Length: 358
Image (cartoon, rainbow, N blue to C red; front, side, top):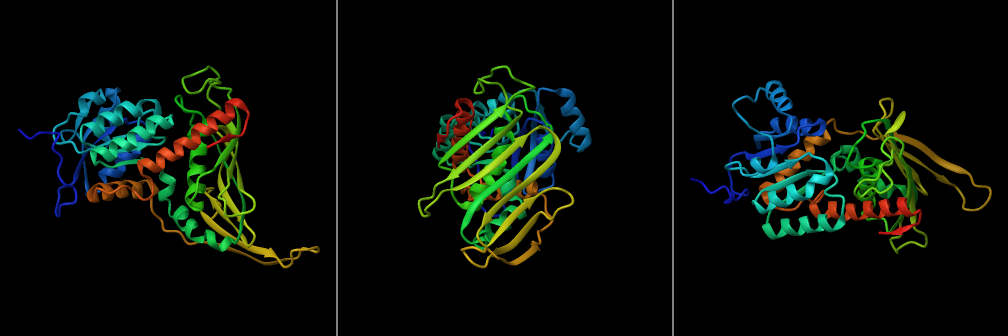
């Protein structure tokens, strides 16, 4: 019998599709399943969800009956013979034991964001992946959006960067395991970090919980439904830090998905609203630096963006990283750990009302 702990070298030429299991078949897990089924480099061999009816319905929907194993618990699935990778789309509080066990079993891991809710556990998982020589990647999907990737290339055209701002609001979906900062603001922070090539050095935050105000583990003031966040990027090479303001809410029917970075020669706007271009470069500057300040060179350019599904690009990238057995240059376990460190500082700032060093 083949030892399931002996994993093949994924860099070998002509290797068969990666055998993977998907843990958690809720809204996002279903999207991950759909994308991996569409990739010939992957073979979904197992599905895990405590809801048997959901597993049955998905097997019918994707014509999987007889071709995948269905499990009620992840502890059973992780021992599936020949399994090579685990895709984890479960609540954030469950990530640490699942990912730890998967890595110890010799599996590569793709996890839904955030990696965990504590910096220490995230760092431990990243270190374990290195020790096991397995790939740990986190699904920060926006980093695979062509508008975000193109935006990073255009940042130098903005001149000296001055500030940023973002709004991410909608009426739901509401999470029971993390607040609006962890669920929504983490997207904008990851995008800004990607564009700037830096992390914030300090944060300030304040929020309000209406729907779930009861204290929870890691959320002593309940789960904030709305929040405001100030990010301070002190990169040391400029006389003043760059600051960005972010507003998030899952209790606001005015749906917004907009982020902007402002420089002295222009502004770059990422906008997901249906009526807007996904990425727009607004050029313009002042003719003089003393009164009267005369605007000049005003011009708006809608940037052409490839029509691809970011989640599909993320799934494909994970398979490529596993095949090469090299960490993702975009969304590795270490990058996700660094982002968790920022989010922990955000949570502390929201709890204490004080600016917190990252």
